[in-house]
Image (cartoon, rainbow, N blue to C red; front, side, top):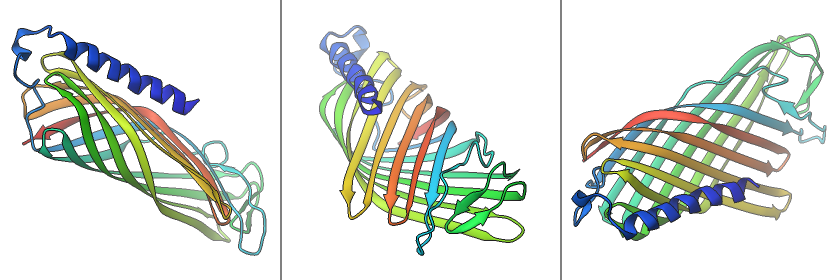
Length: 270
């Protein structure tokens, strides 16, 4: 269902782009690119406030089954603001090389309402515990805009995502942590259309699903819908909705990490 909804959103944007570029509405579009499309380098920074849904299970190497630990219900983590950095290099009109970095941090202190087994260690009920989650999400992408017009485009995205997740629990007696990291290939689509000479709407969806191989499996869905107001070709403001959906099973560890929420920021181009 998440894949279907995301594809519907991206297809809707693509359909809008096709219809918007078929018949010009604004005379100033004729023969010229929309405001914000004339650049070779683009930097953008955003503040993102997602709602967390994080579940992690870690089994010890000795075979002790771990608990399904809900970082919201069991450990009390709350929504937080994170920064996102994006860089786009555009050597030619239809070709873009992109980089993105999102450092995600959660920490909380609580008194457990049930016994938890984490990496073979028991964290007993009614004893205070500190929890920390660090998630560094990187994206290295190539975008080819196979359909390009002055007022929008539709493109193919090929990328490598690198996910680095570390979770830890600490109480007066023990400290335990798990660390999972791996490069993840992904493919997807992007579409953009202009509703006014300087206002665009963009939709992007990338995904990857790894079938179970030697007890390892995973999937990664990434949906990004946003609008941009370009004050000039060089400066603009953005706002949108972002959704990360990561499910992994690596050796003795598995987890579900879902972050969804609104973000706001700005963009500078040269």
